[in-house]
Length: 482
Image 1 (cartoon, rainbow, N blue to C red):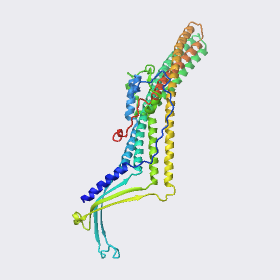
Image 2: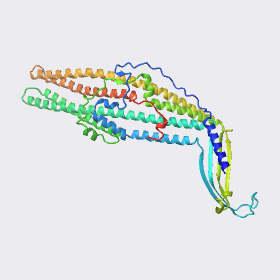
Image 3: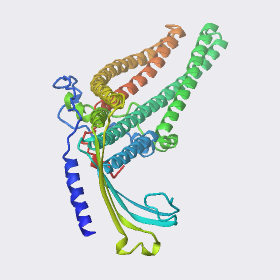
Image 4: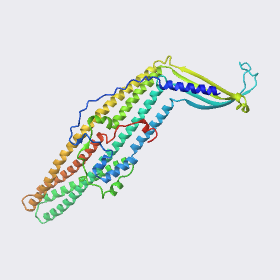
């Protein structure tokens, strides 16, 4: 028995060393090397600083910080992504276990009435066969099939972890953009309500003047028309605010209205929110390690490449070994006697002889998936670079529009004030007042939208730059934790 155990131990050690040193049939990964400029061209981007992970705090709004924290705790998409990481972790654990010996216990008890004509005939007398023992089996991974399968599972775990970071970044960006839109709608509703109140006073004044014979009916009807136009704007804005609150509710996993209202005393208006003077962007080449979607695409390419090695190994024979050590007796009372011990040691070699192209088809499928992964990786890099350029253009464009519209609003406020003074002095008709106030109302609403667009463009730029994430993925970081 001791000799058998020593033999099995030496044999398994030798086989595992041979297996770990086996060859790999997977091709070498050839990742594309995109051509990128040395630096970004925007003066708003700084090349030497690191983007903070909590970049949303830079807007200086406590309510926004609260909403983001709520979303990170309860967002359904994030929880789904975390569950996918857990699934990938379990798949890797199972795949890694395939590379090690499998120890199983088996037992059986049989009473048999044999044929009198059998080779080992007992004279037709029934007999018992009771056995119990351990079975040890192991596949020698000479061709790297199991190693490549583990490599593919490891890469898919890292891809799922990177995808979770991409979802996290997207959720933060959507919460920030949704919150800015909500604050903009609040401001637009305030402007509309103020305008409605002012126009109601104007209608009352014009009606008194009409009844006093100072103006004609046309001036009164024009004032009533402008009041109705402002009143019709309020339901539209309130509907949009409700829709935005509903959208935030989905992102947070619950109703955000209570959060926003509880923090309203410390929340900033849309015009008071801080806009970063500069954004630490690094260099264009840094996108390769700052974007989680690029990291996920890279790991998918590594996984697809390893699966080619798995498919190619199907052309070669599998070598397996099995050993048994146990007890066997014709009666339960004798089962634990020293003479009841039994052992068995053997091996098998199984390889394809004629599979009608099945193995070749599996290799072709794996190679096609690898080409798809390579294209997806190259596209992820191109899309990332384009998104940064688009976001930079958005920041510049909204900044220029914001400055121009602010000047326009200031000018229209002066125009409306002068028009009313001219009307009250009898130098012009009330139509001039209505035109000036109509233009002011529309432009004030547009200015709020542009402020929102400018804030959202900076959010989009943070997202395009990776949101402060750095690619330092290691499978050991995800094998035992969420």
